[in-house]
Length: 460
Ligand code: AMP
Ligand code: ZN
Image 1 (cartoon, rainbow, N blue to C red):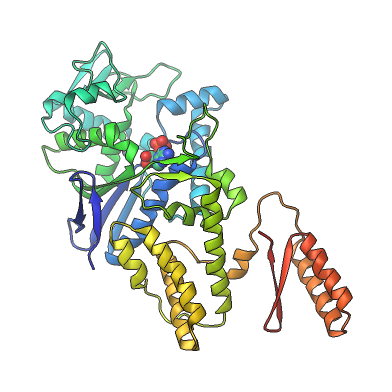
Image 2 (image 1 turned 60 degrees about the horizontal axis):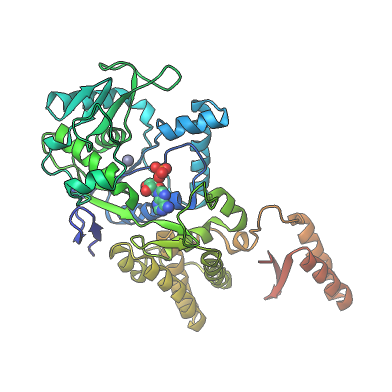
């Protein structure tokens, strides 16, 4: 089976084959660490998590690199505003990012380079760009000279005039052309800075990713990903820097971009006050529900997030775990990702189809008559779930999830009440048994009697 991916560079779906057979290198732009991750930041993490899991099933040696941008003007501004040191802010938000993405069941990348630990390599790359005539020094800045690269604009397909008009291109007196972009800029004593041939300064954002991807994966590598907003200028500029520094050698062979996420039809922004952090959402929904909701839309489509998105995902996940609970005693008959899931994912990561096929197994299970058949479908549910990063906890654990802050009885107390109720039922004291059941229900604990056993779960 072939993996087909939409390549932003060619604007076509193409069969993906790695540069070296069985070895894949993937670089995805990671977070700029100055605040909690919002639900938009989680989209590339989950999309490329699906791709990473898929690549690992089809190729022997996969290296997934996702950087941490820990030097950036937004970080400096946030640290100053919050009265926190830059080091404390980036450390704290990096830890929070890891926690939040783990709660969404995202696998960790194989390498996570931090920009601040790669400054000498950035300086070396800039020096080489100057030497090769692609960059110039002006007033303590080093700028990439866009006119030295005829193919500039090939990824975003922007024409020269659009480059200057629409985009976030800074016009500055020291630039030869407004489209020239910063590789290095001077730092004031209160801002982070490193010694360089051009004085104390700090790197531009684009050179960080060009350097770190090259260091981890080599000059030419298989796949580069990120959100669609990064196509221009970030990825266009990475492409320009790396190609020119490497004497025209191709940079990333496939460029994969996820669509943008909006909340209730609006772009998230601090000024509107509609920024939805993953941390906040996790108080109201399990990570798996957020994951299901996110993957219900194809990664290239825009995704509009609303409460409904979560409610629907919750219902589907409840159905899936209810099915798994019904076949708890059976051993799964397969560990291979089922074709219904795999072929959808191989077709440009069609997660909506994969998810609906996963839920389709529930119907198949309800119709199954023999234990063998049930064991086979259980295997499909678990292995299909694993391909999507879902269904990897026990049904008990799933049904015991509860929102943060809800009052709760501890588990020993619940078990004690259940034992008391069972005793009452044995003694045919149904009034008492019902009272215990109602009291538990009033505390948000629902009981179900099945096959001689009483199990409990948290209500909604
Ligand atoms: P940043 O921390 O802003 O550099 O973004 C980290 C990653 O999240 C990048 O790949 C962005 O493209 C992506 N991203 C940021 N906001 C959104 C959004 N609203 N929808 C989808 N992806 C986003
Ligand atoms: Zn990047």
